[in-house]
Length: 58
Image 1 (cartoon, one colour):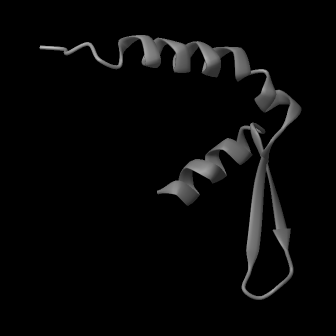
Image 2 (spheres, one colour):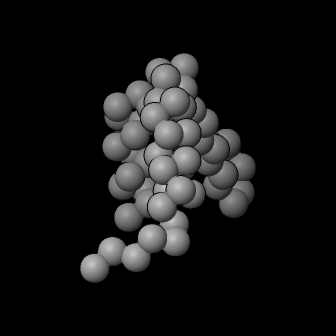
């Protein structure tokens, strides 16, 4: 599931994938410049979550 999500983010150019030719195989993911444009949205979502963490929904 995680691999599928990462591949989708890579396809959408939000993350970059770097494969190292070593054993065992190693892969690193990093945000692209385009992916960094999502930072304000992610910060807002984090802040909203922190603010509403203790609120119970019925």
